[in-house]
Image (tube, rainbow, N blue to C red):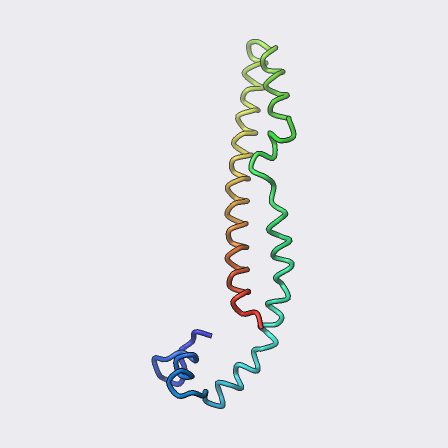
Length: 121
């Protein structure tokens, strides 16, 4: 709770540090929000599981699909070879974009966990 209270420039923690207590209304507000914090903290296992659902960095290549296509392309000539190499390029680009998005999603979930763990009761 980093909000500013009672028309002052002080947070709840600063008010407590200065006065050794908190105003009754602020305590009531905190008690009223305890259930909200508990509910938020109950989402932690879901977020942790979500972090593990992203594909690995080279998920397409790990299946061997790109290597197989490169082997096939090595045996082809002309337009057929060009066509399969174009498909390989698209798969590489897709793999890179999914890796970027996965990294971003993983990072955002980690940030959310850090926030929630700061509120753990």
